[in-house]
Image 1: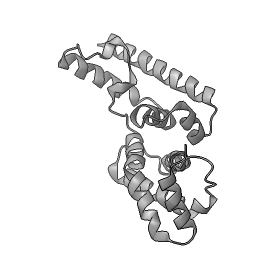
Image 2: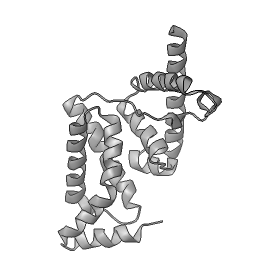
Image 3: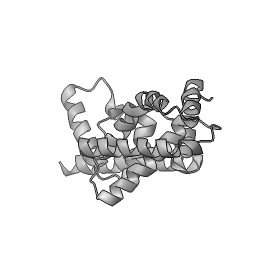
Length: 184
Protein backbone atom coordinates (compact mmCIF):
# COMPACT_ATOMS: atom_id res chain seq x y z
CA UNK A 1 0.00 0.00 0.00
CA UNK A 2 1.50 3.28 -1.06
CA UNK A 3 1.39 6.30 1.21
CA UNK A 4 -0.52 9.00 -0.70
CA UNK A 5 0.85 11.76 1.52
CA UNK A 6 4.42 10.72 0.68
CA UNK A 7 3.58 10.61 -3.03
CA UNK A 8 2.04 14.08 -2.85
CA UNK A 9 5.25 15.59 -1.46
CA UNK A 10 7.47 13.53 -3.75
CA UNK A 11 5.58 14.73 -6.81
CA UNK A 12 5.86 18.33 -5.58
CA UNK A 13 9.63 17.96 -5.19
CA UNK A 14 9.91 16.30 -8.61
CA UNK A 15 8.03 19.22 -10.16
CA UNK A 16 10.44 21.76 -8.67
CA UNK A 17 8.89 22.66 -5.32
CA UNK A 18 12.00 21.85 -3.30
CA UNK A 19 10.51 23.23 -0.09
CA UNK A 20 8.19 20.19 -0.04
CA UNK A 21 11.22 18.04 0.72
CA UNK A 22 11.19 19.38 4.28
CA UNK A 23 7.94 17.49 4.91
CA UNK A 24 9.64 14.27 3.85
CA UNK A 25 12.63 14.97 6.05
CA UNK A 26 10.39 15.82 9.00
CA UNK A 27 8.49 12.58 8.65
CA UNK A 28 11.48 10.24 8.30
CA UNK A 29 14.46 11.92 9.96
CA UNK A 30 13.91 10.45 13.41
CA UNK A 31 13.58 6.87 12.18
CA UNK A 32 16.57 7.15 9.84
CA UNK A 33 18.65 8.71 12.60
CA UNK A 34 17.56 6.02 15.06
CA UNK A 35 18.63 3.27 12.70
CA UNK A 36 21.98 4.90 11.98
CA UNK A 37 22.76 5.73 15.62
CA UNK A 38 22.06 2.11 16.59
CA UNK A 39 24.80 1.03 14.21
CA UNK A 40 27.48 3.65 14.80
CA UNK A 41 28.77 4.52 18.20
CA UNK A 42 29.12 8.26 17.84
CA UNK A 43 26.10 10.57 17.77
CA UNK A 44 27.93 13.14 15.63
CA UNK A 45 28.84 10.47 13.08
CA UNK A 46 25.22 9.32 13.06
CA UNK A 47 24.06 12.90 12.45
CA UNK A 48 26.55 13.27 9.58
CA UNK A 49 25.49 9.99 8.00
CA UNK A 50 21.80 10.85 8.38
CA UNK A 51 22.42 14.17 6.67
CA UNK A 52 24.31 12.39 3.88
CA UNK A 53 21.38 10.01 3.46
CA UNK A 54 18.90 12.84 2.98
CA UNK A 55 21.23 14.62 0.56
CA UNK A 56 21.37 11.42 -1.51
CA UNK A 57 17.60 11.07 -1.33
CA UNK A 58 17.12 14.65 -2.47
CA UNK A 59 19.58 14.28 -5.35
CA UNK A 60 18.05 11.03 -6.55
CA UNK A 61 14.36 11.59 -5.86
CA UNK A 62 13.72 11.90 -9.59
CA UNK A 63 14.71 8.24 -9.85
CA UNK A 64 12.05 7.11 -7.38
CA UNK A 65 9.55 5.26 -9.57
CA UNK A 66 6.59 5.49 -7.17
CA UNK A 67 5.70 1.83 -7.70
CA UNK A 68 6.77 0.87 -4.19
CA UNK A 69 6.72 2.39 -0.73
CA UNK A 70 8.88 5.47 -0.41
CA UNK A 71 10.02 4.31 3.04
CA UNK A 72 11.42 1.11 1.52
CA UNK A 73 13.37 3.11 -1.05
CA UNK A 74 14.59 5.53 1.63
CA UNK A 75 15.67 2.73 3.98
CA UNK A 76 17.59 1.08 1.15
CA UNK A 77 19.52 4.31 0.65
CA UNK A 78 20.03 4.54 4.42
CA UNK A 79 21.25 0.94 4.56
CA UNK A 80 23.72 1.33 1.69
CA UNK A 81 24.95 4.75 2.80
CA UNK A 82 25.48 3.68 6.40
CA UNK A 83 27.45 0.58 5.46
CA UNK A 84 29.44 2.56 2.90
CA UNK A 85 30.27 5.28 5.42
CA UNK A 86 31.28 2.67 7.99
CA UNK A 87 33.75 1.23 5.51
CA UNK A 88 35.02 4.66 4.48
CA UNK A 89 35.39 6.04 7.96
CA UNK A 90 36.23 2.71 9.57
CA UNK A 91 33.74 3.58 12.27
CA UNK A 92 33.04 1.24 15.10
CA UNK A 93 29.50 0.11 15.63
CA UNK A 94 27.61 -0.41 18.81
CA UNK A 95 24.85 -2.71 19.87
CA UNK A 96 21.21 -1.87 20.20
CA UNK A 97 19.89 -1.86 23.72
CA UNK A 98 16.89 -3.98 23.17
CA UNK A 99 15.48 -6.92 25.00
CA UNK A 100 12.85 -7.35 22.29
CA UNK A 101 15.19 -9.55 20.27
CA UNK A 102 14.47 -12.58 22.38
CA UNK A 103 10.94 -13.75 22.93
CA UNK A 104 11.85 -16.81 24.97
CA UNK A 105 11.42 -17.41 28.66
CA UNK A 106 14.94 -16.21 29.48
CA UNK A 107 13.74 -12.61 29.13
CA UNK A 108 10.38 -12.64 30.88
CA UNK A 109 8.96 -9.91 33.02
CA UNK A 110 8.75 -12.29 35.99
CA UNK A 111 12.54 -12.17 36.32
CA UNK A 112 13.70 -9.73 38.91
CA UNK A 113 15.32 -6.48 37.84
CA UNK A 114 18.84 -7.56 38.72
CA UNK A 115 18.65 -10.71 36.57
CA UNK A 116 17.24 -8.73 33.67
CA UNK A 117 20.05 -6.20 33.99
CA UNK A 118 22.64 -8.97 33.86
CA UNK A 119 20.95 -10.53 30.83
CA UNK A 120 20.87 -7.17 29.07
CA UNK A 121 24.59 -6.76 29.77
CA UNK A 122 25.20 -10.17 28.18
CA UNK A 123 23.05 -9.16 25.23
CA UNK A 124 24.96 -5.91 24.87
CA UNK A 125 28.31 -7.71 24.89
CA UNK A 126 27.06 -10.28 22.38
CA UNK A 127 25.64 -7.57 20.11
CA UNK A 128 29.06 -5.92 19.90
CA UNK A 129 30.29 -9.01 18.08
CA UNK A 130 27.77 -8.57 15.26
CA UNK A 131 28.57 -7.04 11.90
CA UNK A 132 27.01 -3.67 10.96
CA UNK A 133 24.65 -5.22 8.42
CA UNK A 134 23.46 -7.72 11.04
CA UNK A 135 22.71 -4.89 13.46
CA UNK A 136 20.92 -3.04 10.66
CA UNK A 137 18.69 -6.05 9.93
CA UNK A 138 17.87 -6.50 13.62
CA UNK A 139 17.14 -2.80 14.03
CA UNK A 140 14.81 -2.71 11.05
CA UNK A 141 12.96 -5.83 12.16
CA UNK A 142 12.76 -5.42 15.93
CA UNK A 143 13.02 -1.67 16.50
CA UNK A 144 11.27 -0.32 13.42
CA UNK A 145 8.89 -3.26 13.03
CA UNK A 146 9.66 -3.67 9.33
CA UNK A 147 8.35 -6.86 7.76
CA UNK A 148 10.73 -9.41 6.32
CA UNK A 149 9.37 -8.49 2.87
CA UNK A 150 10.26 -4.82 3.34
CA UNK A 151 13.67 -5.68 4.73
CA UNK A 152 14.19 -7.82 1.66
CA UNK A 153 13.52 -4.83 -0.58
CA UNK A 154 15.62 -2.47 1.54
CA UNK A 155 18.64 -4.76 1.69
CA UNK A 156 18.24 -6.12 -1.85
CA UNK A 157 18.10 -9.69 -0.59
CA UNK A 158 15.52 -12.41 -1.06
CA UNK A 159 12.85 -12.90 1.58
CA UNK A 160 14.28 -16.33 2.31
CA UNK A 161 17.74 -14.89 2.75
CA UNK A 162 16.50 -12.26 5.21
CA UNK A 163 14.66 -14.93 7.22
CA UNK A 164 17.75 -17.12 7.29
CA UNK A 165 19.97 -14.19 8.29
CA UNK A 166 17.64 -13.12 11.10
CA UNK A 167 17.51 -16.72 12.33
CA UNK A 168 21.30 -17.07 12.20
CA UNK A 169 21.81 -13.73 13.93
CA UNK A 170 19.49 -14.78 16.77
CA UNK A 171 21.32 -18.11 17.05
CA UNK A 172 24.68 -16.31 17.01
CA UNK A 173 23.50 -14.05 19.82
CA UNK A 174 22.22 -17.02 21.84
CA UNK A 175 25.56 -18.83 21.48
CA UNK A 176 27.50 -15.71 22.48
CA UNK A 177 25.28 -15.11 25.49
CA UNK A 178 25.65 -18.74 26.52
CA UNK A 179 29.46 -18.42 26.31
CA UNK A 180 29.39 -15.26 28.41
CA UNK A 181 27.20 -16.92 31.03
CA UNK A 182 29.51 -19.95 31.22
CA UNK A 183 32.57 -17.74 31.61
CA UNK A 184 31.15 -16.17 34.75
